[in-house]
Image (cartoon, rainbow, N blue to C red):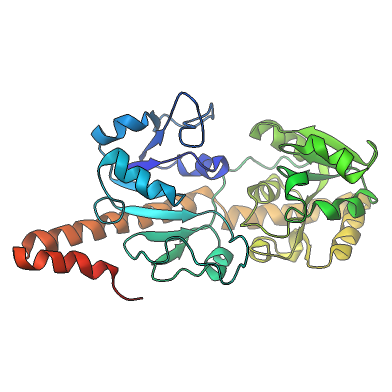
Length: 348
């Protein structure tokens, strides 16, 4: 298939474009949110940059939508309406903002576009309305077992921890810094020292590194901390597990499925996680044993093969469903064709 998909979430795209299809990625000179293209990432050659104004002449078999605005953008750029004229799925990366359990999904009134959630928690919390839904869990390219844990510190990967504060659990970090130095990676982490008022020996800012360099550095840390209160599921957490690191995580959102207790520690009590951090810092053999379990679990649940296979099946179902509706419409008498199309928008 030839699949139209915007580069919205780099970590997810790293996995998605490793399938057997051609992936048409809108690209503009500005490389903005509507035209990031490959952005220099090491993707296979079947991830193809395409100018938005050239999409109308491209063969497109399906589209993966990720933002509500893309529905109108696809119709404007291709001349085909997603769902009714072009097979479409909508990928929901995020948990709701605001009133979580009463948040109505933007696709809730559509039953012609498959709504794909990246976690079971996301599907549970969103009000999905009429939309047909499924869950395709993350699949991660295996960075390999690199864990050494030689550095008796706590690794953290977080983007914009000062702006997002309680969402990312930034306020919890000082308690862990009393156990061992925090080595923090990610975007805008340079603002942390002033915000947390921690000395350099307790808080070390390691910068926003490219994936391979991040994996190499992170694997040297004794334990990985995931203090996020509200998120879909941080891919850095899964990557840490694949590296063979023991992990500490708040038992919120999808982490309760992603992190078995044997992989480190998971709790809604930060104090329990602080004590687990203390144990792993002082008992490297126990940390290594937990990390080995974390890796085995992550390889089994979040492997790339199952992820790509599940996406193939979802896209093929949408393409087949669209062909079926088209065939019915072509066979029906002209007086009844409008009825066939209108049936798609009725009922839960």
